[in-house]
Amino acid sequence: MRQQILSLVSAVMPTVIATRRDLHMHPELGHMEFRTASKVARRLKDLGFAVKVGREVMNPDALLGLPSAEELEAAYQRAESEGADPEFLPLLRGGLTGVVGEWRTGRPGPTLAMRFDMDCIPVAESTDPDHIPHIEGFASRHPGETHACGHDGHTAIGLGVAEIITQIADQLCGTIRLIFQPAEEGCRGANPMAEAGVVDDVDYLLASHLGCGVPSGHLYTRIDGLLASTKFDVTFKGVPAHAGATPHDGRNAVLAMAQAIQGLYAISRHGEGTSRVNVGVVRGGTGRNVIPAEAYMQVEVRGATDDILQYMENRARKVVEGAAIAQEVDYAISVQGRGLSSNNSAELAALIAEEAAHIPGLTVHNQGHITGGSDDFTVLAARAARHGAQTLYMAQGTTHKAGHHTPRFDIVEADLEHAVAVFALAAARICGVK
Image (cartoon, rainbow, N blue to C red):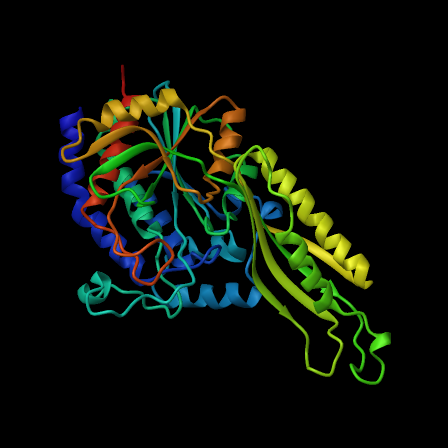
């Protein structure tokens, strides 16, 4: 069946590339992937998959980092004007933009799930004359938003795999579940899907990421060293006062924030592994002669293990509380995203390496690749592992001219063929009729 699959992969590539380019032209930020998700659902349904979207696959009570109602509505209206599918679009309201497509063979066998993320980055795409999307006419049409991390490629890969599954269905057993996840950026979208139970009954769970420093033509079967991470917002509320006449009547929220920032960066690093802290956004105050009554900051902490992350988060919360007490202001902490540390199955990695070795032009490394970043695939993986599943997160190489999350980021579209082949061969190996 391997040669049949490789031929099918080659045949589907024009559609995969066209899909990737369409998504690249219409990038959508996390929880606002209305056009993307509706088109994914439409394609899966047309292929014959059982499709669930919105509340069926996302727990609304577990949403993290949800945009404002105004932002959601504006994105919804834009998606509608850009050809979002009318059957599925209304089911995605409120930022519930997850999609699950399931192929049930009707024959006993394992349940294999594969995860593909869909969201873009709030970065303005390059207009440099040598930037391929600009040259080829598929650059982002949305100012300040672009697929600068490769998720357009991930979504297109998932739909390519879906098409191949339909063509080898008579040779498969068990169930294949394709999970199209929103809001990976900021580690927000996996949590409500995990809480909805989308991986509770799976035996195997796979995902991969394009690039991550791995060049074209190479596959690392494991992404190791992902940092567990918590993203949270902090608001301080004090008392305004005249800064010259009655400063003693005020309670300075900006001063509390400033003390908190210094305290956060002063947290002792953990002796058992990497730890990180960053304050990325700060806002506060209304005028130079007013004691500022409000302040706001966006913070993240990370750790090499879940225990180290918990240490960093606990210390960060104490720092914020202490700064608020010192300045006699109120404070609130709101968690906006969460990711866990890596947990890859060596057995599943070896299986993938054996199958991927048959893909022409692909060099397979059955070893870990260290990225140093975070990804909330780990949330789904941890949930699945608790129910006995083997999980694996791979690095699919693609050479890019600039790093992830930068205006000039791009992928080599030829590498999409390798990625589709890896997933398709894995499906055939795990769910093939014995």
